[in-house]
Image (cartoon, rainbow, N blue to C red; front, side):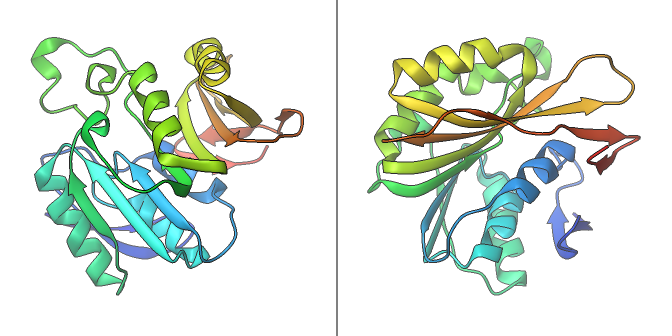
Length: 217
């Protein structure tokens, strides 16, 4: 196990040397979180707990994380204890997870199509472990009316996300494209969705990745 620091909040963080590590996607979503204090938060695919630590800045009254990787959850428990944070952690598939609805759901779900030989190591990235349809069914079941979702996903699936959102009764409140400066098109989108009454969708100014560093221009 190795020790790193979560960018922008500079909090110490343990990671497994031989498993999935937090990356720029985790950080991009973490720094875009913005909600009121004293809310209930669910992190879907919490892995080693990075997004829960970013969410803790907003002093939630309840934090819950779920993941299918028991080893990752053990490290998440260590990370939370390191910062005197409390969260309920469950090893569970989303479809099997039962809980009272939450005020906010945050997620950096898997969205890559992985070769079968690499799936065990990369289950945190392989969409065969959590499809968009299953994800949105979970949103509908586990989010309160007028609750918010914060998620990051591969940009090429934006149309699919829009279709799923409308089909399950969600409105996309904002879309923030993310560009790697080595590429000509956005490779990620950060989305806020709501369940209930909404305003029009906002297309936010983009974020850029320069050699792994995040900037607004």
